[in-house]
Length: 419
Image (cartoon, rainbow, N blue to C red):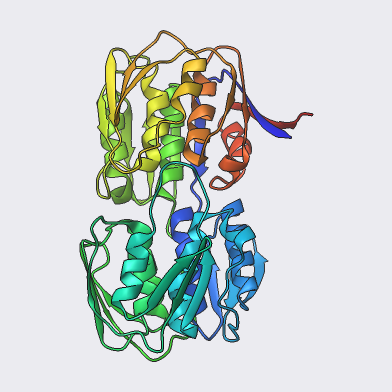
């Protein structure tokens, strides 16, 4: 079994480049199934979730080649399978995103209920509601979802919640639907814009991504294209909090600052200096961190994927902070692990009250999900002694060589195998 060991680290210093966004790469890989010519994707992060998605594409009949570090070539011209195996769906929730493209290409899509991080129920009803609105029949039985149609037809679809996954899946399914599809109350995340830009390069006709209304005019066929994945705003935020929690001075390169406005704003509230440049941010820490309140919201609000990392920082801020989670109901699974390290946190429904402590203490802990794992690494860097983190497969799902990259900034973080 592999674990990540974290020792109290000196202030992080240096420069680090952010990888392509996990939450953009996965839907774009899925969307590659819509194309019938060669597709080249650049800046694809080398993470476990991407590896699983590539295997999903191969299983469905697409040809997938790793050309170089971060460069993947896909050709789905001979797509011939509409069944996504349980063993792959169970590993990663984003596997569900292939349903829309397969339904559009083959008129059928079968998959099992998706797996992934246990951060909440994240029902897939909005995905299925969208498919039905486009004219598909959808049945769920024995843990499988079966969607089928003779022809997809455009429609007006209102999402009860601005779900990122549902917005993406419906967008992809509608690209070749007859007529016009309008998605109201759509998710507005930057990753949705990236998906729209990619699909339009393939020949789709989509407008409005980044707003709450997306309009898709169906086309007959999609081709090929080259596309560079946008920078990962959550990875950027994680490194920024790393600089703050250690009192460091770090330049985080390859960022789109407009994507991380809430993180920048909250770091400044805490007392950290953040200097914005054209495609980078410099984070300069302080020894006087102040308590603040954080409320997660769909984009452009504070991202739920940064809540755990920020809570790690708030554990050593002077005063009492409140973190309110409005997106997922199980986002506080890391709280007990932080408390093992000496944090003073109380849960009250969807709120966590965090009272700053003088210091954290290293302890054996377990990562309950991807972002919780990142939070424990951050806490470990600020904690006295040694922290040993188990279940690091969650961390590998979303971060590229995180321990080596943190070490490049001076962190004392490494991986080792234990019995």
